[in-house]
Image (cartoon, rainbow, N blue to C red; front, side):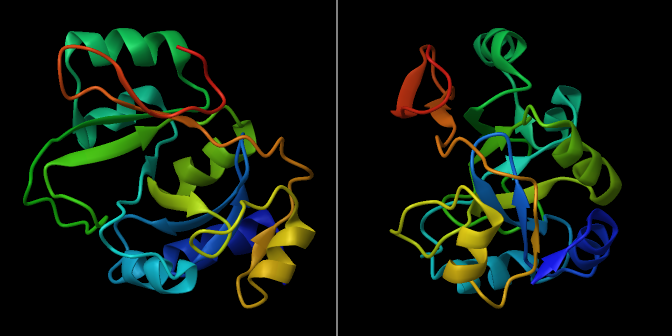
Length: 186
C-alpha cells in the first residue's frame, strides 16, 4: 500500500515497519526508540537477529548519540557523509535500550544523501533499517517491487533508486576494514 510522507512519519512514530526510499535502495525502517519496533522489523524481513540492523541519522552529528567515533572514523565520515557509507563503530553504551541484533558492542551508522529521507528521520528520530526484501533476496529499487515482495508493508514511493547498497566499513580498529563493497569507493 502506497502512503504519503505524513502517513509514513505517523506510522514510524507508532512503531510500525515502513518501506522508505533511501539514496541507495528501498529500506524497511522502524524508529529505533519505538518499543518492540526492531523485533517487528526482524520478523517482516525474516532476518536472523544475529545480523545487526544499521541506524540511519538525519545529520552526521546525530551519530554521536549512538557510536563512539575515533579520529579515523571522523575522517572517513567527514569525507563521505551524507552518502552511501555505513560505518561500524563502538556503541556509546553496550547497555543502550535499543535492540539492533548482532553484538551489543558495535553499531552500524549512516547519514544518507537523500533530503526527503533525512526530513523523515528528522521528524521521527533515528531509524533502524535494512533493505526492503526478505532476507537473502535482492533489494528492491522501486515502490512497485516493494509492494510485490512485501505486500503488507506500507511504502512511500520515491521513484527508482539505483539499487546499489551502501558500502559497509568496520572502523573499530586502527584501519578501515571493508565489510561490503557498495555505493562508495574507499
